[in-house]
Image (tube, rainbow, N blue to C red):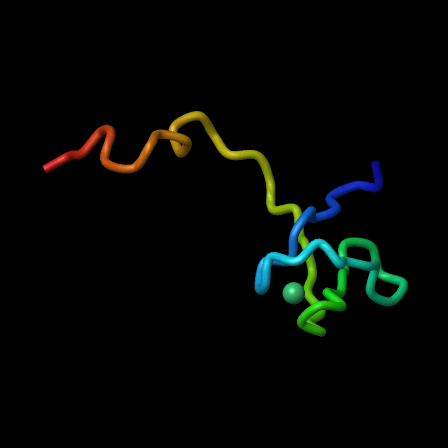
Length: 58
Ligand SMILES: [Zn+2]
């Protein structure tokens, strides 16, 4: 395992992903030739993980 490696390209869905440059978390898709970064933003708090529409407040 090498950290936060994506399994599929978020743009075309291909699995042809390779590290991009020297920076950690940067990837390139050789199927659609896009480069992108995967960034860890933090842990969700339990109150933000409710399913949409589950606890609708009106
Ligand atoms: Zn792609």
